[in-house]
Image (cartoon, rainbow, N blue to C red; front, top):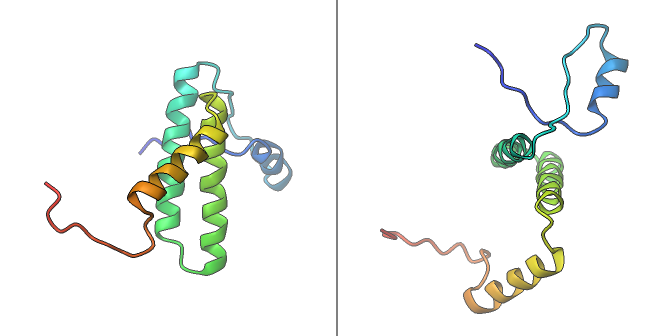
Length: 108
């Protein structure tokens, strides 16, 4: 089964070169639509890793990775962190957060 290209952190190429003796294939995402697809795939990958984290330390590591991807998306799409935080605060004030564990049994 062929593995699809995957977005990695900026210094991974150098780290892999130092650690392993074999060569890996690398390229930079030069087309915006390619980079966007890689970011969205990485977002799903990191969210899935959060889902399956077994320890507090692992959970913190995975949430840090997820936040890093979210930050990259914000930068790539030239979004305003201030505006995102304002929207977040307004939604929380008007609709609440997710702390109480309320489940809607029949949303359809």
